[in-house]
Amino acid sequence: MAYRGHYSSGRSGYSGGGFTNHRTGTYVSAARAHQHVGQSFGGFTKTRSSTSGNFYMKGSSSNRK
Image (tube, rainbow, N blue to C red; front, side, top):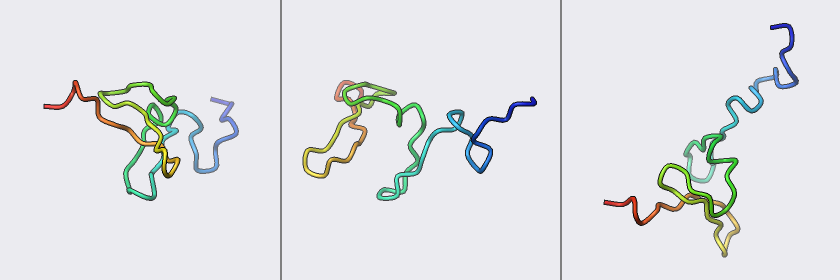
């Protein structure tokens, strides 16, 4: 408990790690934020837009009903 780390100023380092996408207003969890393009997570695959360069999560077709 003596060591608090370098992230004591409003951030919890990597334990929280998520962020809010200001364009869409949605929260992106740390698990999704740290994925690489092409990796799947919870039925979604991380993809990058060829026009804007933004990253987004695309639903896997096998997971849709």
